[in-house]
Image 1 (cartoon, helix red, strand yellow):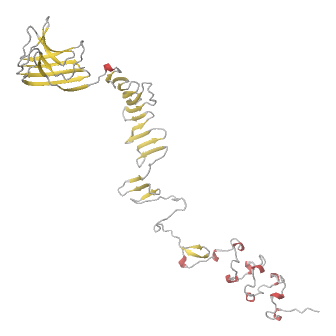
Image 2 (cartoon, one colour):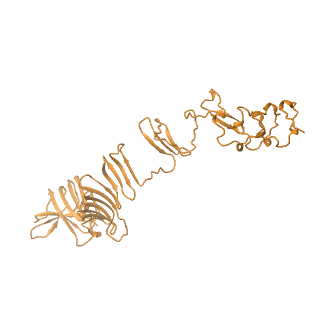
Image 3 (cartoon, rainbow, N blue to C red):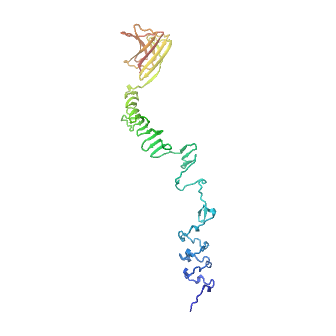
Length: 430
């Protein structure tokens, strides 16, 4: 039987249903371009399962041919979209009110345009997400505003309106750490302090070094021909004559011209001139020329006054009638020199004239006798004498006046009711 060709015009509308067409009988190759009108396709009739992979390309879709309403929820996933397939033109553009805003994800909801605040003046709590790069510019702070460090403003740095700059440490130690540190003028032309790691520390005045530490002490420098050093004995072992502490004046060649030092071997504070010890002080007193013997030490010096007392060897008297009564002394070590100015007009003592009240006890040694010059006023001399002197025996606290002559002995001066005496005497004190 011959086949009769049937055109689409000969087919009643809706006569060919999906049930009349075998599965996969009509492929895209059997359909003429634009043969299937989207109006002729029932809603949801074409599902993703009905479309073979890659059978519908972008060139086969008219503009706006795929309406979002015709897509099942979640039917288009990122895996279904080719890389770079969505261009900027496909993204929401917003309106003029959205200028300068950024598109923000909303936790699954539609994205919205949001403003990102870049106004640091209005932002009262700006925070960094990384290191701040100044990009070759400076950070400027006006007067009396600080840069704070630490959780509790532990360190503050600022410049005040009174032209002073401050670094204020509010807790712990303020440590400045470097192998070498120099404090200088703003133009770096003059030094104030220069600190050298494993070395000396120097202080300057008007850019001239005046003070520095050394490996053995400190040195005070001068622009002239001498340096002053304070030196401590580095070993301090007590087995040599090196000074434990030394105050020394050196010439520019480093040679000591004079020094004051404490010698630890014999516990003496000494003064040297040109390398020779001249004066020292030890536990015994003042010593000279390197001598340390206690017997040779000068252990006392003083000056003062004493009160002369008229006395008689037989009867001391109960009336003196002093007109002048002055006594002075100087004591150097155990050597005492006394002077006396004594006048009277009503003395009733008897026997040898004696003057009591010496300021220090006399050394009790029978090898010692003491005498001195005297000047008299209206005092009767012993018969046959040509001179008068003071005299003191060892171990007693007064002196008498004695007359003597050429070829003769001595005789004591007797008490006189009215007279005057000016005399001196030197004796050894106990």
